[in-house]
Structures are given as C-alpha cells and as structure tokens.
Amino acid sequence: MKNTDHSLDALLELDGIEQRITNGYWVKFLAKLVEPNEHRPHGIKYSLTLHHPSGSRLLGYGNAHLADIKRKKFSAKRVEWDHKHQRNIMSDYDFETAGQLLEDFWDQADRLLKEEGI
Image (cartoon, rainbow, N blue to C red):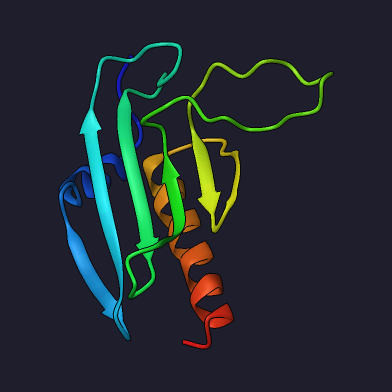
C-alpha cells in the first residue's frame, strides 16, 4: 500500500528540533519511522511537546509508551499508544495523519499560551 500522508515528510523533518517560541516557552519534536505494529499502526514514533520557561511540560502528543489513562470500565481496551498530555491530564489521541497531528498540536499550544497570558 502506498503512503498517501504527504505531510509525513514535514513531521519527520522536525525530528530533534528544540525551539524557543515566545517569552521563554519552547517546543521539542521527535519523530521517527518505525516498523508498523498494533501499538503504532501508522509506522511513526513521535513526541511533540510544549514547555513552560521553567521546563515543565504543558502539552505533549506522543506514542512512545503505553498511556496509563483512566477509562470507564465498559470502554474497549485500546491497543494504540497515541495519547495527549495536557498539563496533568492524559487522554487518548486519535491519530489520523501527520498533518492533522501537527495542526492539533499547534492549535492546542496556541490555546494554552493564551491561557498563560501569552
């Protein structure tokens, strides 16, 4: 099957970048191709994070590990590791494409920065 996610190259080019964005806040990106499996069916291992000037993480999208998310007992067990950290709350993230991931990250980062008064 041919890859139709044309935004994947843009995500992969961000791998290893740490960048200050405003008033001491900074972002860090990790993105690597991996062999697709049940936990990473899209074949990408990624971590996109927004940090406070103190270094604490305000926001993170990733799939580097199994997320310990408290779900209702009746919900199906999720095998994909895609999840989101927002301050101290972790939730599932439904990965669609690399482009959607980048858009979701920056939209949420903008909202959090506004909450911070930036």
